[in-house]
Length: 452
Picture 1 (cartoon, one colour):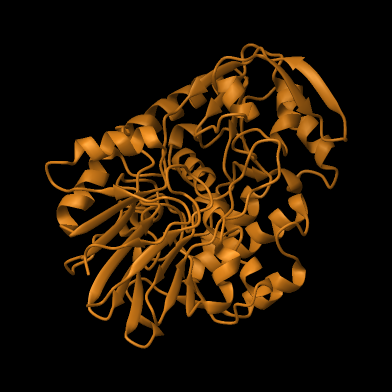
Picture 2: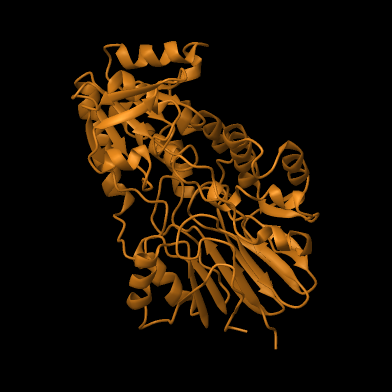
């Protein structure tokens, strides 16, 4: 019998530190190797992965987000000398995220030399192209519909088919038409459960609200601030704004790492990586890239003195939209805009992404208005936020109905729930009992998979 075990080094009944080991007596394959970001604290490494690094046959990365990738460079420090497999876009995005994390946290987990070793061992692949991991073990990447280059990982382990979804999205988004299902019958499904009890509205309905509010605010010569994650949500938001002709004359300022990620996205605007529907929308609008619109203005193009540029944007009399990092308001340019625009009750702060407990974004989202910000010049400042706060319920993760769908369609013998809190997992455990019997994992405990 082909006995395969799975060991979770994180992301069991919470989000963060995604890292999963598939192993038997002969081989060890690692899926993702992320860190857990904690508000106002240092990040946390996956527990136990250091001990197996030197024994790994291969390492696969589903996508660039730091909770899936942030600890990966440490593997070389701990003895791994093999290859790192990922898609072409993921390589471009993750390298910049790694550099940014190194700048923020320094060499806590790994250093420049580790990063250099990893970068030269990356092997990139397109979707649906099988590749060898070890004797009798191959894999291929499938579109996950999550962010640019994000992949589900389908592994053929001596005839046993294992699908690790990582982060998937079933909704039609600006660049994607949901996740792709494998054509093969799956034996083992390892799937996220982030929205296990949440029905996510169709994206088009939320887009309409965002555009209408943006038009109203800017027509009245006020500012709309959209804090956004640099990878994924910022590009989706900008595309939504770009394809609205009513906003073509509205200055849309883009600040922070978002500009770098926009340039990477432009390199991969082909039907290998984004939907044909999206490419047709661009052609119909006369655009090669949504980010080339004349009203899209990178903040660093206004002045070499970024604070002066931000002050100009915040204090001029035009109505404008500001799309800026960070998505959870924990730092970055958004603090300057809160300081300069937050005292005007006609301005709007629009939340487009999930806010983790303990972050400034979550505090504001939950109603706190007396806040402390970093004014960008090394000093803290207390202020009372008077701007309106609006919520747009986007999600980069599959709705509960999408999770149920993939369980039904794959008809796997064994289903493992990961990457979701206990409440969401308990809900979906009950919700899908008519079609499957999912299980959860315990961190660091080797679990035998049933489908083998």
